[in-house]
Amino acid sequence: MNEVAAFFHSSLSCAGSDVIASRLQGFVADTVAHIGIAGILTSLVIFRDWPIRLFWAGFLAIIAKELAFDLPNAGWTGLVMFDSAWDLASWFLGFFAQWVLLTGRRV
Amino acid sequence: MTRSLPKIRSNASCVNHSAVADETSFSIVHTPRSGIARAIWSGFRFLLRGREKSFVANRVQAEIFARERFRALLRAPFPGVSDREVAEIWAGKLNVSDRTVQNWLAMTTSASITDMTIVGATHGIWQTAAIFVGDDKRDEVMARIGR
Image (cartoon, rainbow over all chains, first blue to last red; front, side, top):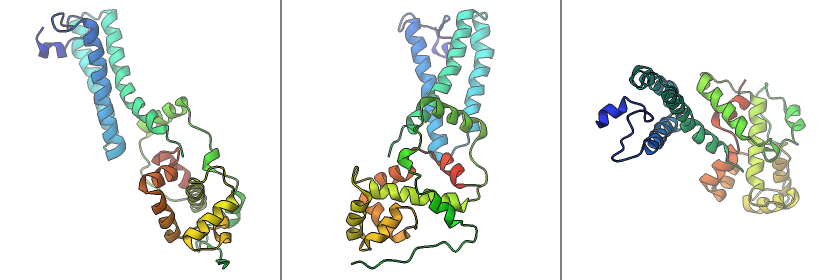
């Protein structure tokens, strides 16, 4: 599958390239990517006072991407709905992982 | 050297010093530890409410906070040591009386910026910041010392 086209398909649909990676590997890579991008944005928001709305803008962009591409391209199947919800959860995981770790400071 | 220094009092009329004296038992060491649930909840609040847009200090709470954190700075290098012994050690280093340091430890007087600088310098900036900030994030500190 074309790499650009893969961006517009769920990793649990046909986007998983069997040649270079399994569908599970693609799914894990996508999950880590969502966590990583959210983590970078979270760092900028917390440590550089970037506006929090950038975090929400990223969240809305993922929703739009899922609704406009991943879900319709996969025929709104249950598995891809799960993948979309997982991607959204991963986005929050990127924020909360960092937030919770920062809360663990002790005197 | 047994010279006792006068108590440092704020000139601000809004500062209730008796209220400060009532809070001497408060310690950052004994504040409730933040659990995962509390941290996640504070994260949601941060995402939904954002940062404080305006800030006006609560002088009483700010004074308590500053004294409490300075006390933590004094105690930090000597865990398990009594306040009297801690006072003796710091008095020698800061060239002030034992009584002065005891007052700081009891949170009945505020240290000067000079004393805070000296104590902070002995810790180093990272350790000083870690102790001074404690468990709290900036927003939590602002909420505590703001109106």
